[in-house]
Image (cartoon, rainbow, N blue to C red; front, side, top):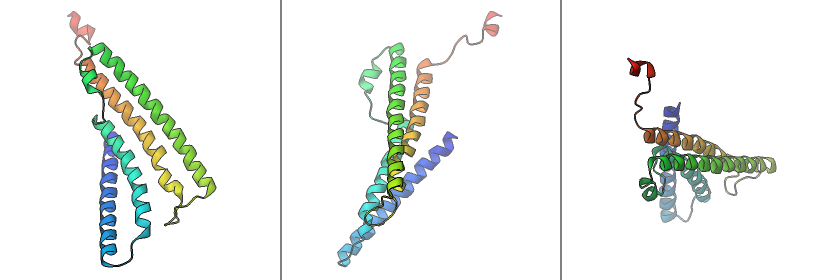
Length: 167
């Protein structure tokens, strides 16, 4: 299941980034050659940037590439590393859980009020969905990363099968 989510995250980011680059490029060319511009482009680019940022944070969490305090972590004894990994996961799940709940409330509010974007007149909740959806994915990725780091710190298990060891 995580492999499918990996591919969806990465291809969504690639597609959005490509679309954003093309839209910005075309808008610059049109503005340069004419007196017109695509008024909706800035609004769309900003909202897509939110999606890419949130999905990028999820990808970085999965890969263990988020900015961290590795200088201190690398110098800790293994038992303290395990404790700090557990604290990291707990804090991350709490943060992203709160962000998910806040995002759901925000989307509900945007949906109930019928808010639309200024230039495109699209419902705001469509773009607001980036917060709860990606925050929930970040919860999954934080747990996934924590389990991965915990297993790495545990190292190879010796003597895990008492029946074999007694012979």
